[in-house]
Length: 505
Image (cartoon, rainbow, N blue to C red):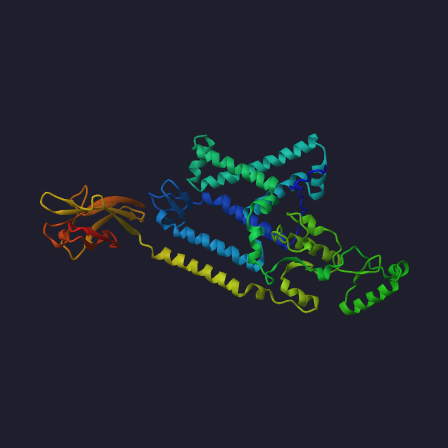
């Protein structure tokens, strides 16, 4: 009987080694800026007047508003949010088509928090080799102490993450006091607990598994990239065959059969390249890669970039920093692992210089993405500046379609919703414009004026009547226009509607 084979490969823990270089510094700066924005933004203040919240960025679900500094988005203006989401998608397409998965490698929340958790792990447990030894060691008092310390810091980071998130949905100082005194709504504690747990598990334990198994983008990126896309790659035509090698010409010539021929080739290469190539113990001329595995040791995904492009690669470029450091130590040119395009390979193999980087970025597809992205952005800004400060909607009451009063007057009912986007109370005057003999009256008042508080909306029942025997009363439909005027500023808005008479179809 054959043994059953598991279709699931258990996770092998990855312990990235510390590395320094320009790409690692860039990642640190992006981590500091993005986390700083996330944690600090709810505490920023913005004065909008006495009747409005003073939190700079606030998703006010209770009043169905979104505040972003001087911008206020109402529920019926959700197209602004939709436009921003479309711009975010196009921006992701653009960056992937031009530079590969730079979003995943630098700014994705999973990457940012994983980098932070690995930093904490390195501070407490040591660098790669120390963490591997600790992982393989039995559970002693020291191991428990280090692990509990690390997990505690991770939980505090997760707690700060969940706490910062809920602050975006209500006044941050007030909610912080309520949380501290255990008087906040239960949904706040539940949300913080869920986000704390997910941050702790995703950033501390699952890490690369989130990118490989949970995120759909690695499977989509192939459609966004082509041979001109600049992405992290290995120049195998320069690095292969890989090996440790030696430059001791005399020892190779004396100890290896055919070593003299290898030394001869060595000399020709010196004349051709102006540098000394490496020779293996068997007399084979080696490439620049010394097979030190530094690129593998620093990779947070645990892959070998020398095997070519892989779904797991997040283009974080830490392998470039590690390889460049090794090349500098052995006296070889940097760039064995680099941002490169497949289309440049033939030129580089032939010894010709690669195309300029901008030629890989400026291409028809990227121009199309940029044009669409810019067009949507300009349209949103234009719509933001031309939107009115007062708005109205009209909903005719059609059950019944009209009412006949005792004197024969025909009356139609309408629900008019007035929206005041100003920061102070405003008085609006309602009127109608029509060629027919129609009159307007408001429910609950003898005048045509309506008071609407600041930054709110009011539903007003309106009566429109036609005199007995008039054309509007006899014919089945008459068009007219509702007008609303801001008494203070003179700003006006209108909506068209229809009056129903006796002669219904």
